Amino acid sequence: MIISETEFEQTALEIAKLKKCETKSCLGRQITQAKKDLRRLGINTPSMTIGDTIKFLEIYNKWRRGDDNYEQPNPTKLGIAIEHAIYYLNKVV
Image 1 (cartoon, rainbow, N blue to C red):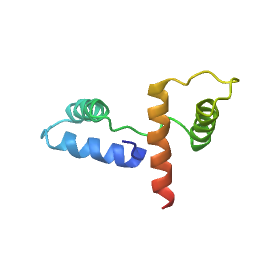
Image 2 (tube, rainbow, N blue to C red; image 1 turned 135 degrees about the horizontal axis):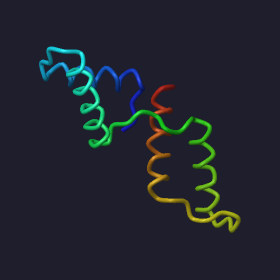
Image 3 (tube, rainbow, N blue to C red; image 1 turned 90 degrees about the horizontal axis):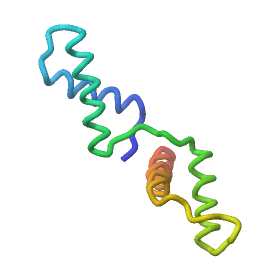
Image 4 (cartoon, rainbow, N blue to C red; image 1 turned 45 degrees about the horizontal axis):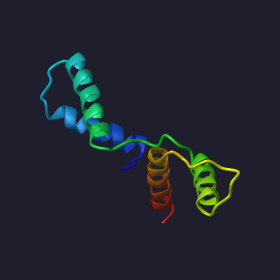
């Protein structure tokens, strides 16, 4: 699942605040850990631009339709591109 950088930061901060830290350094460590935990759960910020996402999906579709000029795309990267496409579409709907 892809969420905006702002949502990601706010979520990490809220998780970190649950740890009841008394110092800034403790809170900083908890925020870092919360970000790792969010990523481990599959919650990420956009790592592909909308242009990169469109280009990747266009190439994938050409390959899927039998265009011999393209090799089979990496399935993991395809999943990431689909997640990004959903994220960007949700922003305009």
